[in-house]
Length: 361
Image 1 (tube, rainbow, N blue to C red):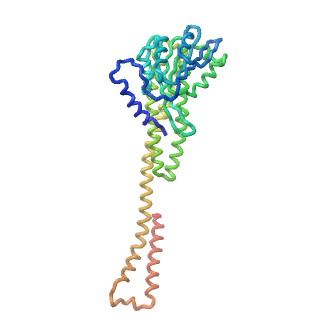
Image 2 (image 1 turned 120 degrees about the horizontal axis):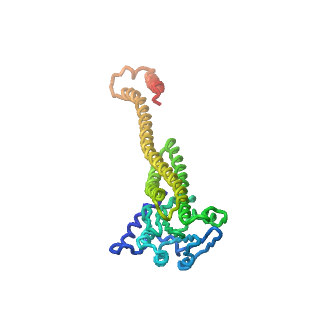
Image 3 (image 1 turned 60 degrees about the vertical axis):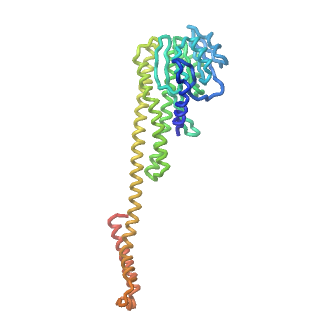
């Protein structure tokens, strides 16, 4: 299940903090998911690589040069002071920092000349509980630096860090635009993993829907429909972001990197197609559930009708002999009782055979 509905409600309440404040006011709107802000730094070039954990953001500033590429990753957005120092050093616009601190942003891309700001939605799957969570990832990259922001550590960055440690890796020879492509590619590829998991859940529910639909099945279908709604809201704007990166003439994005971005765009289209297919399947499954429950009710009514039809003539005969008339010729006949039983059983057997021949049961 996805817990985004509660998250949305709480974020909407936190928006009231900014009421009446001027544009660019740095206020965190989101959740404090880590106790302390974690800052990691990777500085690399073709022949060099430095990786360390930073306690103070000012320790990153000496790495701001044109000789190497510096990747600063920040987990935890609740410390506004860090954002202020970072913005002063790298020259980030206050509106950019304001958007970073607002974790209810729509995926978008903004070009500020000296740097490009990208907002993405990261979808994570907890394999133990099956819960899907949505995390906002903000990326700011310039000529020789990249800064990524999120509220909690992301495991998808581990493969990228391992590639950066490899001196033979192609990424060590490229610029910050290629590093941004790598981060976006990891986030987009993770959508496939989540959709694969959802596809397996849909298949299981579909099997239950055919064999034995219950209220629990309907609840699971509605839960999946909600999940697909939130995923769709994250993916559709992403297509626009990737399209702008591919077709836009940004000075910070080199032409060779644009070819790789085109590949991400193709993946985004595939994800959107898959999301739409799953949504259509889930809508169809609701209709199948209603039809199955209607057929189930019809079967029950048919069985009850058959039993009623069998016992109606028998009840008629029994009630006829229960009438209190003084002169009934059959009452004095020695074999009247077994004869009545024989007639009633005969009628019942005849009706059962007749209904079977009609294939009513």
